[in-house]
Image 1 (cartoon, rainbow, N blue to C red):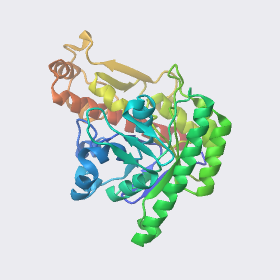
Image 2 (cartoon, helix red, strand yellow; image 1 turned 180 degrees about the vertical axis):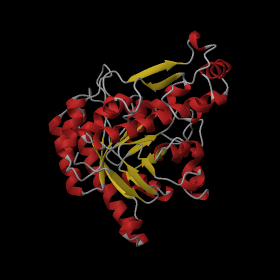
Image 3 (cartoon, rainbow, N blue to C red; image 1 turned 90 degrees about the vertical axis):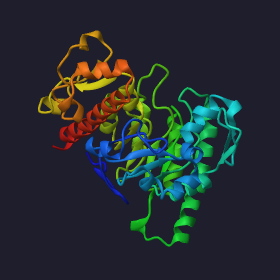
Length: 368
């Protein structure tokens, strides 16, 4: 596979494929930085759109930036807020509006209005101490009308150019050498329209970024992965550039997208599923055919099932996580029924370790 196998960042290297849990507000819910390290997580994604509201940019700065604030000394990618603008404003216009300048929004229950421009997004992300800043983009759903997709691409390109200019201005102002600069990624929009994806990718390549992201909702109306448009978008970017499959984290989708050339993945699904009682397991051991990824290799275990009440076995015999080494299914079900916070931590640890084991199995499958 000729695509990049790793990405060197200020706080360490990412070995591809890399699954990054969402630490939206500066925390992966229910676990701390030591738990993340024990689960062999390489990096996390935090969100500047949310962090500017809670705890607030001045607080993040006062606490020493995201790494010091969260106790996480490994890479952090900060998302710009483009997807959040889509989910907040496009689906609920009463909460704000998108303009050529950027976005204005007022979260539900808040008396304060916020403004987020491409320039401000870059300023915030760099002030937080990010390893990778992502340009503000205008996100759409794949089923949005063609005219809306065209406008999205126009805005995304214009905002990317402004983001690049602001990044360059700040880097010149700080007089930082290349080796001490965070990376900057542009986001490719265009919905399900190949021609629009091409226009967006070519414009972003002309502007010039360190890497790129697949933008927009990655699933169709029935929840199926948009494999064709994902493959086409990857083909538009030269192989030497890393590309981030933004918002993709279902285990089977990760495997598919890595085969297409994507190296970085982030999604809240594995940790959210864990908290709600859905645990991930492999059907085959790691030394099985194809590193255990052939056939129907993924299985879900629902902790609330009555069959687990007196089950003294671990979640899965192939897992080496703290949970499977020390606790039984029956105990986890007991914690779940009690709604005890320990269940949330243990279940999250298991699913996180499943995801990092999946990354290891994929590396073995493709690279030996």
